[in-house]
Image (cartoon, rainbow, N blue to C red; front, side, top):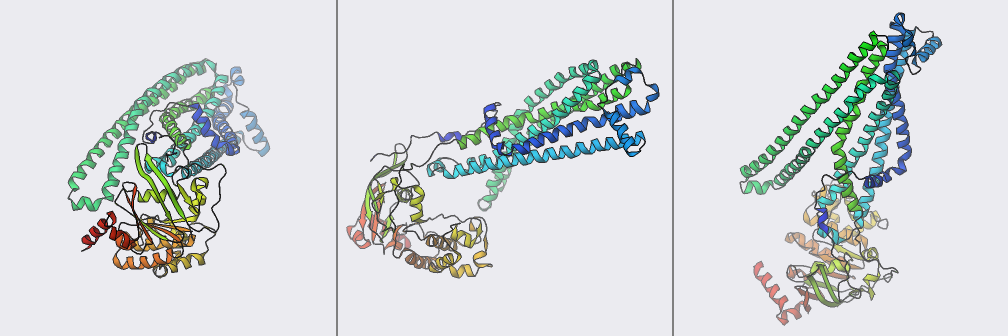
Length: 625
């Protein structure tokens, strides 16, 4: 039978680092779609920044136009002074003075304090609402990416490094937070800029025009600086990544490092990478040290222009002194958006690359074939498993199984043995529907598994792997695995049956004892028994044991063998083992070699046949002695 798997995909795209991605409005629009459910928060954030920005620019108006021009210099007022706009603040101060029976100066201080408090309050509210909207949207995006990754088949994870996938769910989404919150920062800077600019134009268009000449200069300086720093910061991230990778590699392999006395060699390699990182960091500091004074110089030039040209207009009674002071207080507001844009420059390009990587993972189309009209497996399941002319290959032109045909009768214990690379584990992975096979290749109780939904097959087949996984949580959590059909009593009974109950009872909190990462606070044998309890609690119709007694001591193996006899009693069982002494009691032994079925029969029959099985068995017996 020919393989029905889809054409080979280019998995190398997950190994490519995307750098310098151009600004893509399509990617940004798609990203913003995750914020749509939280547009109410975003709208209120926009309202808050408008109110806060207005308060920010009105506070200096109180000091300059009301206090300086209206109170301190009122005796020197000229008709031109009276016409200078005050944005209604003189009338507001007069109303507060009248309403509260306050002196005008005190009333001005009260209004100034009110605007200052309002500016701080609404600016804080803006940042909080924006951050909540962004974090909520990215939470949904991270959830959707994770859900998509859970649905990808085993073929994907066979070919793509897990670290690359993790980067998309963690680091790349974190970069998107920098992007979206950075847009909020820009909004928070540009709104005061526009309000201040409108006030300055209404007071003195000529002086405002002079200041605007400096804006393109500041923008050009920022552009050149960010262009120069972009590569430097990319190199810093690269060297820092290599530094962390080298550190992790050495610390995790410290026993080998010390055993082979590689401390000096590894220290020198780490020092070389560290020196490279230091050089790049110093270069970044040098670039920043030029940029800061350059922007400060432009601000000083703007102040000098205000004093020079504005001072002459004050002397000529064309503009009030308070208006010139107001211009000076607005100067920083004119330059802050340009500085903020410069700071966001590298973030935008880095975030565009992160966007592309995230959507690359989210758009990855790969799935197991699901039947249009699925068939249910029989209930109850007798447990007959039949392979008919099964061919399989992970990659084109690299066959793993060739024309494999045999039948496992219901309730029988069948062992599958063979040299490394013969296809034993592949066979059980196909039975569990981790991969697609040609229709008519694998049957359970006469039903083609390609006509059954993958999840339905896995609910009826229990698997204990050699490298089984322990999740964070309690012992009980690792037996039940969130299955609502398994009660605490069921889990405890399963643990008793497979001899796991005694060691669990000896744990500090029994079944409620938390397990650390990968169950390191349990021995290998204890984790193995826990895996048996997990499968028995699931009560599968067909049981698969892949190297279930590997890497345990003799005493533990005796306990595990007793658990295996209880676990396999009355159900179809497929046992894969390299240690042939452990499967002598199997009803049938199937011998694979180079992906082909070479021999099949009982232990005694195969030993008499003097074929491959007998050779493998005798070699192991000799090695044991």
